[in-house]
Image (tube, rainbow, N blue to C red; front, side):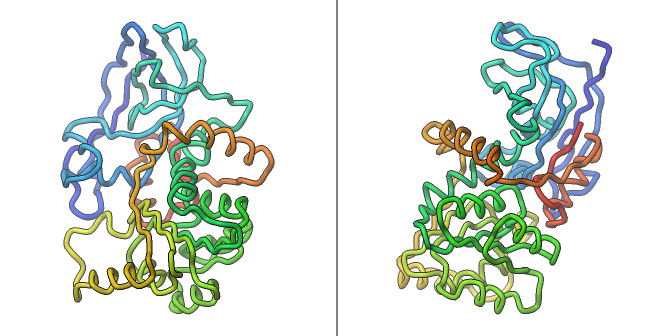
Length: 337
């Protein structure tokens, strides 16, 4: 092939918010697949908050990206060369090609997508890892019962929006927390029973009014002042799936002020709270197939909707990533390569 492979590499470990100097954009030769592998041309790259942790070398659930390596990320790609009979040239697949225009992967590590079932970019969002994260965390940890109140932060993001809509499908009252009037209005369009603006000066009062019977399930994506407002509203036996803490991903030091851990533990004890962090991969084996079947059906029926925030051009991925961390995205953040 005559094309070159544009790659975005991790040049330095960010301190606080990543800067342009933390990335390198380079051109290299297009790789060649070995037996059992496919060569993929990236169509869409997913940008997700977890990637900020991979840029750091702090202990985490996943190994850090090595300096000089291509940044990781899920991709929707077209097969342009195949050395495996299970994949044909022209197939569109879900892969993990990272921040680059071409990648090589074992064919067995890809999932063929059906463009007639849904737009292929949804495999990075509502029908992909974010959607499954919402489904698994809500159903396996939150375990909401019909009539209960489910609250979710970052509610217009791909995880949060899916959490709220699945909560409604399961017969619950769904309350979303988002930043700004436009996002709050969108939650009403999605069918949430109530929506509150965490940037409003009266946010705590808004939340209290939105959950008159308290909170039975709180799906945590944010942390920070949103968690501070939610904690007193949790009911006895409330469940808290902890999916993300995006308010803290660029922190460079511990927050100032008194140690609030004792107060948190009193709430945990006095209200018999269940607070459980999770990574969606622990649920894949037992629940991903069911999720894909149910979510694809809900999407076709119009019961599950989504929104995408699309940036054009791989070279713009770092800037789009920072906008997402600041909460300036609106929907699933995707780069159209």
